[in-house]
Image (tube, rainbow over all chains, first blue to last red):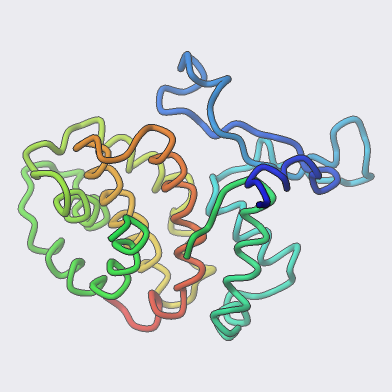
Length: 105
Length: 130
């Protein structure tokens, strides 16, 4: 059986792990052990000219997902809404699999 | 029925639950419709008397991070529905968590799954104003 964390072992290039903000902020003792999400960080160390660092970007998971839909997949929200349910589901499952998060819908 | 199945049901009963939220009476001025939607979601699994300031702060922080007015413009004329659905769903999970029916890890995973669930059902959630 394919383990859920398999995708996290073959990360998308230029994506780095970023901790979710914990309930108590960074003083939360569980912060280092908390869940992470891959975010674009292709300007770290000048790896990509004019690259993007979303570590410091505004927003949480919803914003990151919407950016993926718009910038990486190239859909407007209207185009996204017009996709068949199964296609939206496939895109979403691929995205979540990159972070080792199951999407059982 | 898993909590994922119950989240699915929330999309079907969404308009009804927001109507219920409009009728929630609160003495707290800061309880806008989104917070009241979270309280309705919370009440699926926990008594509203258990709703506390910590729950309010948690939901408010999430709403400000991902569901501010300018961020909702992307979803079209009924973009406010996305904010309200998130509030309803995260309130639902908080109610389960309050009853210790979700572990810390399960709650975190559920919270992360809500955006995916929202985008899967976006056409249904935004097809008409609530």
